[in-house]
Length: 252
Length: 302
Image 1 (cartoon, chains in turn orange, cyan):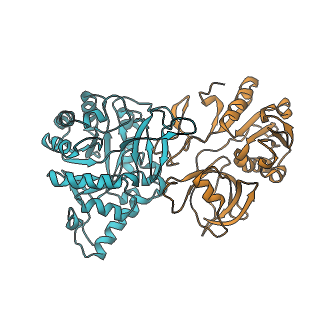
Image 2 (image 1 turned 90 degrees about the vertical axis):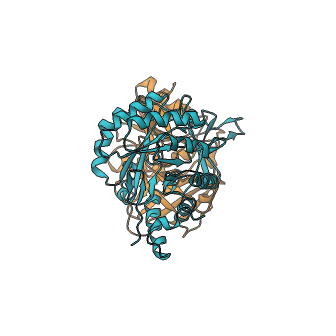
Image 3 (image 1 turned 120 degrees about the vertical axis):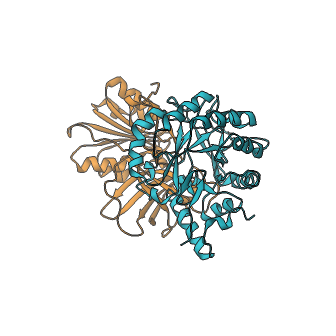
């Protein structure tokens, strides 16, 4: 796929929009699925990089990837230029489920760069008549990503650890959690997801989380990225990355 | 068109390209991305007598031009394979289906072989005496000539079809192990399994893998593998199957020129899921461009 635009956000993030070299996007990309990106000409970034799909824009035939510069592979991506070509495998994995009733109050909880798949999920929910609410957390105001995009699909509640935007503190302390919630979709750092899962479990809220265990193949073949679940060790890349918390053996 | 077919004991492959066990699932994970039937065959995930959960996460860390893994032979056991997986893949694929057999003791290996023997589409097994990631058995058998001989002899008595022994590079003399397997009736040896390695996360001051050590694979190990294939191919009379970091047609040709009759593609499947099909086509193109009538004309020319 070809980079058609790249927008840099703060010091270390980029929103990369990619279009197929020919033809159109594969049908039926689900929110929560991911892409495997081959980093060209690099011996140290030998494996593909799994990046969640931030948006599948079928009108423009684009996918959006929100990338944080966290290592050599993502550094290469963040420093891409328009016209660069990436070999991309997509869509992979199993995404978020739609809540059972349209009247349900769905809270989408994201932390840091983990907000990425919630944008596409929020859009799909909005278009299908749900009323998604976003709770987005970050270290500080500069790490809050794509807020204007999220606002297109629902109210956005923000927390920052240093108080530079929204409520001060962790997202799990945000006042939005005091409201009535029927479903939670969550993606972010593992400690955050575990805290959210704890809240959901204690209140009987249906909750899905998106895991990011280290992966190799992305196809369910190598069994490297397994998570211990009610069904034993299963591949995060194939059976996930999105799991209902009642499938996981987390201590919460 | 050049003849690419090769014989591994009684087994005939339409071309020398196989996929390495543990890197290609049961083929089905890749069938939307490539034509499985363009290959000589697939070697399915290591199969044990009883289901195995494998090792805890984390099981993988990327290293320069390669990766360390410590999967630990996670599989649902031979009965599950026979009942649920074999009927599906035997119907779908015309390429050879080779089962990689894992065991913790000699009787386990034998029992798995006895269960597989009636399956008519399984015309070969690859016996794994070289997994570095399990506590019992596995590599223990593959690191001594006596151990390798013991497993080969026991399996040979119950397995009449093509028998491939998969060898460990974590030994002083892989040639001696190969000779021991040949002496007990193996039809072929495949090498190399992963090299035992280790990587440490210096920020956290602890190993990356839950098992501390793991198996190194990928292009990083290729020169070691080519050297070992070259040494073994000169020393034994049975066909050698070469693997270790093959990621291109040229890489595959290195192994064939070193003496390999067939080759396996492993870790490279993770980066380019079509690589095995591309290498099979690449070998045919190489023969055409170089006026070869048969791929065997370059086998062991080094």
